Image (cartoon, rainbow, N blue to C red):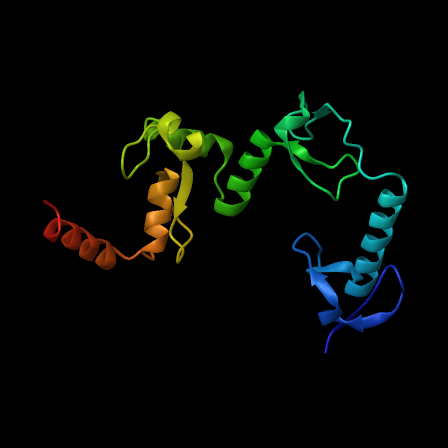
Length: 179
């Protein structure tokens, strides 16, 4: 069994005592799980002792776009001292799309333009879509991006398990029972 030395307690432990970390050369965190959890508990206790998070922050600078935005443009992140994420909502959304689907912001924007900012399935314009945004639709088997869908169509395809046979059966069912 492979092992690793924790950088916090300096004990050599089996790899199953370390969390996975894609950014680390060996694929594991440098601190063992018990040490990491202990440090997290200590940090939370120190924040509580200091009177909690600094919720008086009214604006913050985004780490990505370097712009200063109102605090409402950041998601809540209780692990951060100010209680807000490092990236504004717009930049965070772009980062997630790149991370999850491999789409650069430019390629994502190109998809929007190709689809005229509308759902690829029902044609609803982004401004009229639920949540006023379109979601990246992808094949769960290959990971390939298929297009942008409104949340209703994206959920419908997911609930139908991305299966054209089930979708066709649903269409036939609706045709039989429509008046």
